[in-house]
Length: 461
Image 1 (cartoon, one colour):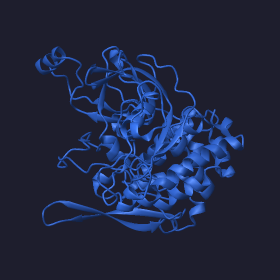
Image 2 (tube, one colour):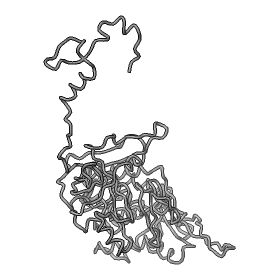
Image 3 (cartoon, rainbow, N blue to C red):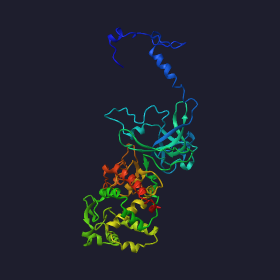
Image 4 (cartoon, rainbow, N blue to C red):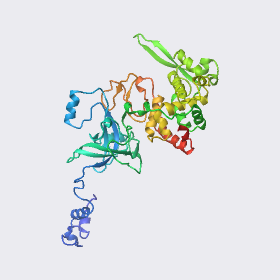
């Protein structure tokens, strides 16, 4: 409000005039008009009291899906039944939901000031928790919903708008990015929110996800031939993405290798370290003259001789598994024939594409055009290569199947995995290049666009 000076009062005509509007007819007499009444009269023309009166169903957007071991129960009876006969350990989900119609604060709200501004993820965590209504089919009650999905919501306490329940699920309408950074959300909007029907919608997980939701673990990529993988490698459509991946693994060296060194400690434990070597050094000949079969056999001899090899650091289980996957889906070639091929740069690139497109099926299905979840495609890459950072936080399991819970104070069970970390961080030996987390995502998106623009998507059919 501007400062009021004596001159403004005594030298300005009508400064003390009443601003009240006449009840009968508007008049120009400023002695009968007050500022408050004038503004109120104008606002009444545009705003209706009790605008939500009689409204029971609201449109909303899922901003995050959070896994929990605590059941999301719809009634006291359900709670009693759960406590009397608890099931085996399972994951349940709650949903951070944004309902623009009733949310009093903008999505970028922060009460911490410039110095302590919320990250977007922290802001999302201030949103209300929603659960699936009992009307959603039972087999969907333990699933995650993609962040950015349109939903319809009712409130258990309609009078106070408390305890939201999702009664219908539509399509994903917003692709959210930048949730782990401060500032404005980056969002790509769809022009179709879909038809919200109970039990429908997207079954993939959202911004905060659990390993149990990573369908890519069991989903296979496109069944294409060995020659198709070699063709894609020659076309270099994935070159930028693969160079970034290789940079985090080997620095881009086709000849590099490593081996394990085991050291007995006074405590009786064994310490494992790694030493660099080269394929040329191990075999006594140029790496381009070594066959795939020779690499596998040398790795089988022992990890103290040769462990991970080449530009994409293929270990024995991975390399042999890739060979088996190729043969299983390509009747035109045998294991014996593949093992006789050279471990050349061209073949290393083709093998890496099998890892990318088939072994990590969620990535392959993304490039084939079967889904648009670029963050999930990028996340799956981090499962294949430890040096590639994960895109979003998750509950991760170690090799013994033990879960590493997120967003609680108990870190005794392991290291919580956060955006920018390696998917295998908990073993203490693997670390990702956090600086490339956004670059990986952008290159995944660019590779798909390039694949389509060059008419090569059919190779993944």
